[in-house]
Image 1 (cartoon, rainbow, N blue to C red):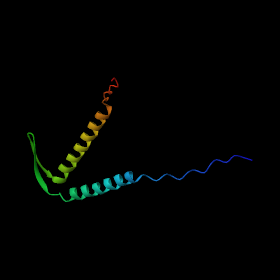
Image 2 (image 1 turned 60 degrees about the vertical axis):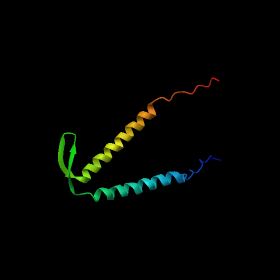
Image 3 (image 1 turned 120 degrees about the vertical axis):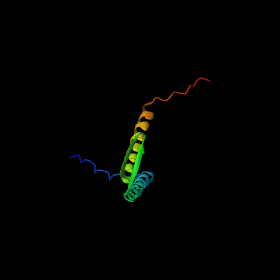
Image 4 (image 1 turned 45 degrees about the vertical axis):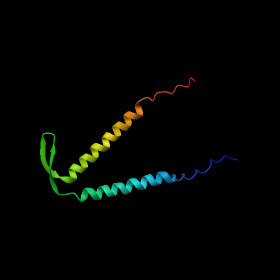
Length: 90
């Protein structure tokens, strides 16, 4: 008799918490998109010594990208920082 390889197991279903995170991210992304699209009017932007006129949507997009990049970089930095080991001496 020849040996048969076992049938592949079906993919396990994601835990509820992971699915809720995914749906929450999708919902927040759609809300953010609607918010951006409702702000198409022009506005005057003043930052430090710069001053220009642009659509509000571009200010929002740049701010969101800057905030996301900053959050990512700080998170990565905090993960790389070694945690002090607790002393077990009594």
